[in-house]
Picture 1: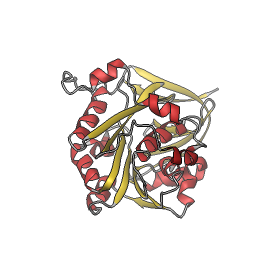
Picture 2: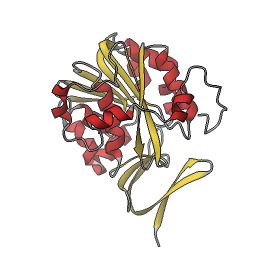
Picture 3: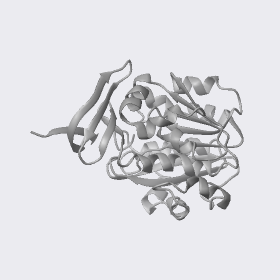
Picture 4: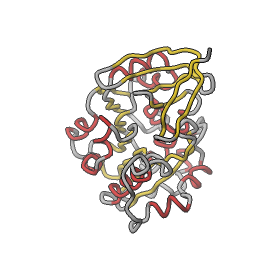
Length: 291
């Protein structure tokens, strides 16, 4: 008999994956943490039965959260990842040769330990001496950080429910902007405009209140409802959609999703998403579709 993992992606849609084994399952102080060996996507991390990453497609999400943002920062040295307990965002940030330190502010130490044990392709970043792990409330970490202390802040948060909700608030985004150095960049995953359009729009609106330049790029992550997923980037001057500096491309030659050609197209949004993000767009109803 096959063992199946089910994620309810909305009240009316689910993803079922056939699994060979459950490698890890433990209830932490915050959530149920599981690592499962799926047949189609390899090992995957799930929190409260919601897929965070799989071995097969995690590179899509992590490359697109990190590289369009860091390429908009002239010389990123200190990078903060809020969330990111799997290590994937830290791994990608370390590709940039100017990066001297990556601080990962992850709420749940159990997530880090599960990934260290079972997902080494991402968690190996924690063995790099440039990475500093701080476990605890990410919003509190940001609030306590000095002004101008990071060149980039990358918000690698799950859906805005439970303990992750504060990471989607305008007050949190304002604190992130405060701790950016001159020329710094803020980026956040901003969910799917198909299934959580209000989350995407609220994130963009919050960034627009803080930054003169705000851009949204997207990628297709198969296990995220087979859906286009957005990443919102804010800067004080640089345009993230501009062609990247040719002198920095060698650092990213090993990327499997991001490329200079894809970079240009990733900022071209489908018409429905452009309309969703227009300042005068109509209010969206609450609920799963409304975020």
